[in-house]
Image (cartoon, rainbow, N blue to C red; front, side, top):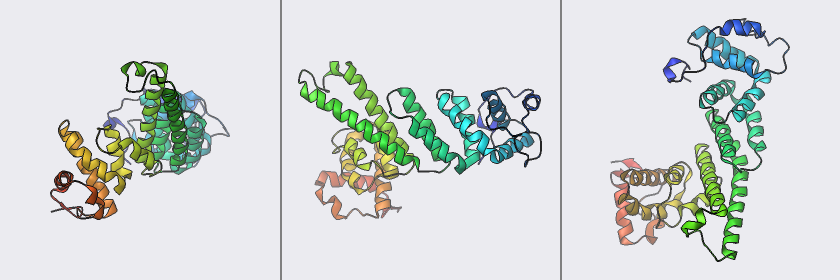
Length: 310
């Protein structure tokens, strides 16, 4: 892991008089690495701030002492760090500092992070989505995928709410989601939020390389006749299987007319799936393609043979 500091481009909270502050707060940050915190069972926000400030100190020795301190005092500092991460969801500099500290602690931080992820309860507001994202991405950086099960629960709940809205709309035939005015209604705004949260969960599951929820991701992809958000394509590149290939091949010429970058994402995603599934252009899976669609498959695979460049 790279050393934090000036090279990150981040300018954390000023670090002046940190050693003096630490001494006043009776934090043994400047003592030997095997010295425990003096019987403390909790830390205040200001005490944690001192730890975080010195974690990004320009002085290498100070940084090493703080890293040793985090490793030794995990039982004292992990929970308050996670609480600070949840509480300061939109404070990007502080989130950067806290998540790095949790990365230093590593796997020992996972149970508390999972507890915090589950405690969100229901995804109702953009702040809930931000909390879910920050906690999940911290788990990803610790290289832990166990958060996928919690995210799957949130996905099921959000899908149920989307289905309920659709049922209510179908019951009331006065408007449909295709009507422009519908999206400005309360139901429309709720639907837009839930769809955004749904996509965010799929992105996070993709970062965890988890196939959980793939059937729903495939439903979002559709049959390939309509464009979809780029996040869907990028997630499919990580967790997609062969069932995504036909819609992607069909979507390729549509995207090519609009976005060169989007078409390239589709091409790279198809190749990634074909490599994972060990398929070739002659696989029976592609028999259902029309001749024009097979030509598009050839364009997608141009320069590749069995997943390798020729």
